[in-house]
Amino acid sequence: MVHDYTKKSTRAVSVKYMKSITNFNHFSVPKPLQHILTRKQSILDQLKTCSNLKNLGSVFASMIKTNASQDCFLVNQFISACSNCLQIDYATLAFTHVESPNVFVYNAMIRGFVHCFHPTQALECYIHMLRAEVMPTSYTFSSLIKACASLSALGFGEAVHCHIWRNGFDSHVFVQTALIDFYSNFGKIGRSRRVFDEMPDRDPDRDVYACTTIVFAYVCIGDLSSTRGLFEKMPERNTATWNTMIDGYARMRNVDSEELLFN
Image (cartoon, rainbow, N blue to C red; front, side, top):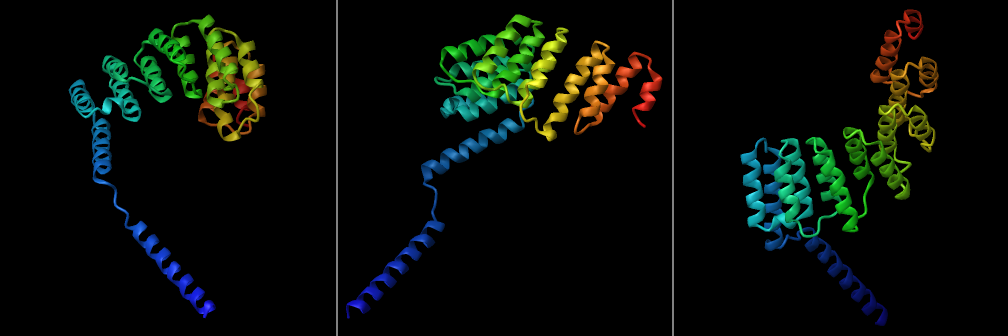
């Protein structure tokens, strides 16, 4: 009898468990949360179609009214939309409304300043970020390098490079590629090559961009010997790489080497 009772008890628990799973599959989102998600999606949909100052103003007014101006994800999207429309003042306004901006908001703001031709403000925003004790990401530095290049500020760029190394982003391909391009713009080909050589375990799928950047750097100083050496070692080549090589030989009026390139 005890055995039969145990079997019946186990069966009852199993049935109850299966019913709980079925009920979970029909779980409905609480109305307050559903309202918040709907409002959030509505703002995102509006941002996708923003193309002028009037549109941005309408969205921002809605964000202020619903307290969405404290939602870091939405503010990030709003700042990006502003920078795409070259309305950096509105982006700055939204940024200043956020009580505790996270790294994604800071990154969007720094990237927006660079995109809208305000590199000095991008560097100032980074300093503000450090003082707020918000840790940067690799995306922070790719924008900062562009800001330093726009200002022709080699010293600032070197300082940013130190921060990249200190924060452990010296192995990120797109950050290192930006550094290669940055140093080559100042004619510092030795530093560009050092950054390139120190890139660990380069992924062939992404490496082609870094290789093309260093190849272009050598082309700019007329060192076609080093250019050709790198070109031959590249695991993959894209259209930009081929065009860079052709342009280099054309500059030097080296038609014979240009023809041999295709043999």
